[in-house]
Each structure stands twice: as C-alpha cells, then as structure tokens.
Image (cartoon, rainbow, N blue to C red; front, side, top):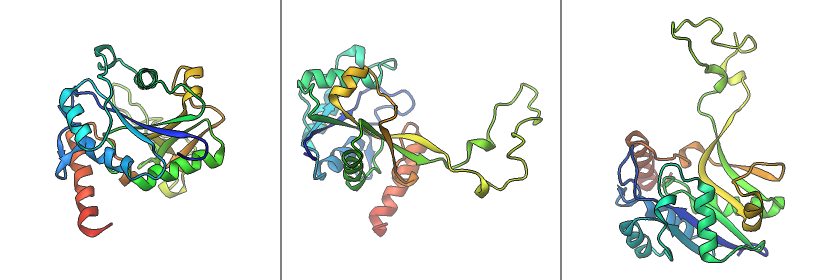
Length: 237
C-alpha cells in the first residue's frame, strides 16, 4: 500500500505480436521478457498484487512461475490489434472486483524491461504527494520535433523548418517530452468515471531516463535494450 491506497500492478501481455513474434516470452538477457517487469514489481515496497492479463497459456505459465497472479484468461476480443489499453484495464479491474477509490492500478507494459523498481516506487510517491488523479511516464525526446516536418512528393526542403528555428543550435531549443509507455498510474474509480486513459489538469508527468524507458516493438528495439541491460548487469551502471 501507499498512503490509503491498495496498489495493483497490471501487466498486459498478449501472445500475438506482428513485428516481433512472441516477444513477451522471448529470452531477454537469460529470462523471458515479461519476467523483468514482474520482478521489478515484486521488489516494490508499495505494490500489493501483481496481475498479468493475457490470452496465452505459455505467458500465463511463465508469469506464475515468476510470482505473478493470472486469475483469468483475457478474451479474444481484447487480444487483437484494435483493443485499447483502457478496455484491457477495465476488464481486469472488473474481473478482480476492485472498483473503488481506495485502489490504484499501475499499468506496467512488459515491453519496458529496463524500467526499475526505483522508477516504480518514485512514480507512486509522486502520485501520492501530488494528490494526483493520474501519473504517466515520459522521457525527453532524443531529437527535437522542431527539426522534423513532413515532405512533399518532390522532397523539396523549402519551408521544411519553421522560421523561428532557422539558425538555432539544437541546445538552444526547448526540451520536448514523449510518452514512453512504461508506467501509468490511475485511481481505479477515476478511470471508470472517465471511461478512458485520460490526461487532464490533475494528471502529472513522471520523467524516466531514455535508457530506462525503451519500449520494445521491433527486433532493433530488442537488440538495443538487451545491449543496455547487459552493460548495466556487467558494470553496475
């Protein structure tokens, strides 16, 4: 618990993946990818229960072996490419019977294996200290979006950069942040009232360093994340 809240970590992990098949069970530095998120949650001083929502028997078995609870199998209609994160959260909360303003859900994607227990606990502490309705993890953009634009079919660069950017160095530009998908924290009752993952005046950003917030979607993401993890393991980085 943290403050007055019971904290449920929800790890959504479907079996299908088009760009990197079976990525949630793929071995990552010697363990199934999903195991890294389960273990980060297990060492949290605030998380009371760890629940994996999956449609896949192998993911269920692996998750249980690493100490997570898999009390239901996610239905097919919530396991395709069109299912929203909110729909998956809503289904899990209803199955668990925790629709209450005394419950927090912290969504931890298994594709963010470099997220640490420290990230999780600090995020929950910020949520509590802010009196927030929600908290969402972000990272600084590696490159300013002010240096980016669409291109016409001719690929001409005319008007590619805004006038206010011309002649400026990258370090002179403001910092931009991106959602990284690593951590979402919401009061369960607020989620049900809004019926969506929401971003309003009482939802705060929580910054995670880019090297701890890689979201694995492709083979290249996997290779980069595994290289960073191996470096951290070997050097205590």
